[in-house]
Length: 418
Image 1 (cartoon, rainbow, N blue to C red):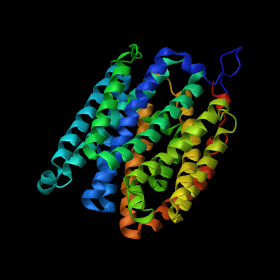
Image 2 (cartoon, one colour; image 1 turned 60 degrees about the vertical axis):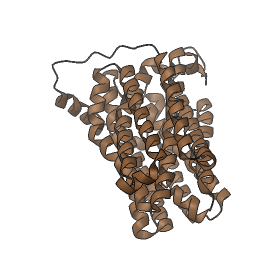
Image 3 (cartoon, rainbow, N blue to C red; image 1 turned 90 degrees about the vertical axis):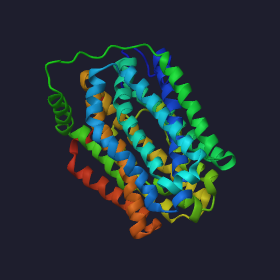
């Protein structure tokens, strides 16, 4: 592990930095809001259409704008003040939620006139927002703490994110089920406002020096070449992208909740939260025992475990067994998340963090949305359960292929990256 010279490992060291505490608190509430909105939109879409492909199209509607601007957003994060970027795009997300609330109050008339197009429109705005938030967030977080705390900061950042991702679907499902869609969107708005209040208290950090004579195309090309010439970065990003692309069952959870497990929106909230519970518990373990030595081997094992969990989930007909299997998928997934995040922080120069993070977001962030579309399309063609089994099986094949093609990734040791 990487520690400050002369000091033993302190699992809580990064939490002693004021701005880091405030910033991950902002991330908690904005993630809570995003995850709540994702569940609310998914269940609302299912109620309106009863169509698995419509659920999959939610992912595509978010992925297209995300991918379209992802590289440019990395350039922006390296060129302009990162805190201001995060503030403005958080406000844009708030505006989208207000639009969803207005649509929901008159949804029957709006549905007859425009169908579900207004929902897809706001989902597209969310993809646009996430494309700009991600690289600026990753780049700013690296400025808040010293280099020797990058592993510790990645672990706590992952923990906080997953706690929010647990709470968001659970709160969203419960509020939707008991109080309706309008109240659920109001709570999302409240959490975004809390997040913005916390963000305002974080100090402004200067943007790293950039060569102003470089053209935007040259700067974007530099970021792409940096990633594609680094076998470790390219391998970790590809592994996670392909595993999530084929192995994700989250987009189909409304159908599992309604037609296989019969648990309604309340149960859907718990199903969505289960992987996050597993991820949080694993984060707490990794805070004390960071995956430094043999990180590459653990990365491959964890992604394979994720694939197996998804296959077993597809077969399960018991709600509690399904919860456990999703829990285990989160346990395995979080190991790969922390290893990838730490590797990205350690191997990237500060002046390139935004661009490299944007490339990573194309690999990782968009794969969730495209994976949702793939899941919906596969379920439409193959049937729900066979499509999820197929996705988990593809994940196992991908792990095997990357393990053979990327020897540097197999031998990755984070202790050596100081």
